[in-house]
Amino acid sequence: MRQWIYIIILWNVAFILGCKHDPVIDPESSSRITLKWNRAYPAETGENVLIGLNWALAKVGAMNRVPVSIDQNNRILLDLDDLGFSVRAKRELKRLHSNIKETGEYRETGAIDLGRYVTSILGASEHYNAITGVPQKLSEVLDNYHLEQEKGYVNNSAVSSQHRMISFSHQAGLKQLFLSAEIDSINDEILEYEIIEIMENGHLRYGVYDVDSNRINASNPQFSAAGKPAKCMWCHESKILPLFTVQNNKVGYLSYLQLKDTLNWFSSSLKQKQLLLHKGVDFGQKQDHTQMELLYISFMYPSAQRLSNEWGIPVGVVKSKLSGLSTTIYPEFPFLGDLYQRSDIDIFSPYQGLSVSTSVREFSKEEVNHID
Image (cartoon, rainbow, N blue to C red; front, side, top):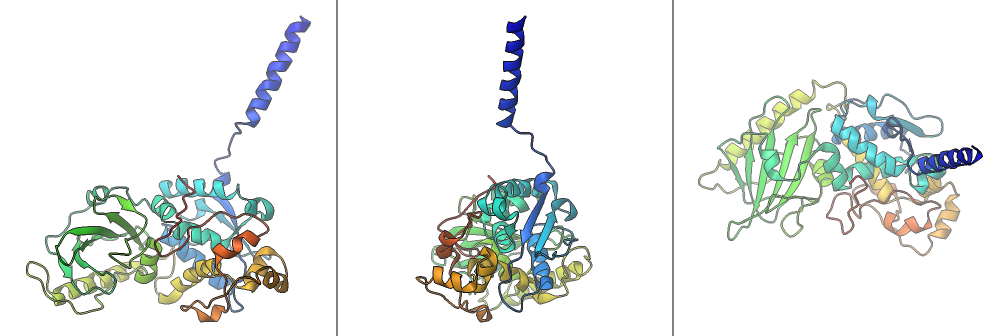
């Protein structure tokens, strides 16, 4: 009898120890994540930050604004269930959140830097594609639309070094596709594809595909300066762009003026629809998207003051630690002052944060994927 008691006790101990290696995960825990705002420049306000965060979340499909404010400790509790994300988007964001919470940064501080979070959802193409649902194959995109027979031809692009053939579907409410085929200007061979779709929240979704119609993370810099989806959204600003340069007419395609008028009509029609949406960002404030860009730029190119706030040490100590590194002025926002590069300073951080791609907008030598 005593032998059976020992066996039962040992079995229970083994069962308990085994459970420790396979914990039950609360499915709601990854819905919520805490973000920490580390002021990057003197004029940055909590209002600016929330505007930027709302634009970033909207760019990956959020229907609603963040319903909370920044607390006295400069923290924001983000709950995916409040933001009107699709089931797919929430699933992918939960995966990202779970990996964020395993980092030294989150374990040490109980939060992820707000700029790092925005950089992670916008500046990592694999994350952006997964959250927004950009298909792996171009055929999966085309199956959802009927492209018009009329096409435009761009032979003097402000973005591409090649020619472009522009196809589009009818704008049906908040649903439309634009397909750009990059064409070799000498032999007329297709080199690459880029797509723009209108999402349910009025924002645009971007995708890049190679000549074999496989999704890629960024356009080939040999063909185009379009870069990554984050660069597309920076340039397009949630609108259908007009033609910036005069084009030479090509037989079989819309004339320059016809294409120009068509794109302008689509853009005006989309804007009217966007202004009727009230749960998300304010589309009437054209420059609000800049607050989003400042969040990831000031993270990727931090000042000594920002790093002081981020690392919790005096500015003088930051400058001493980084005395061997050069600084730069970001040409788009010179008021940010003397800036370091994130890739140079991460080794000096008191804790390890979630790694980010080499560049937010351009083709990256190192492209992270913390969702797959």
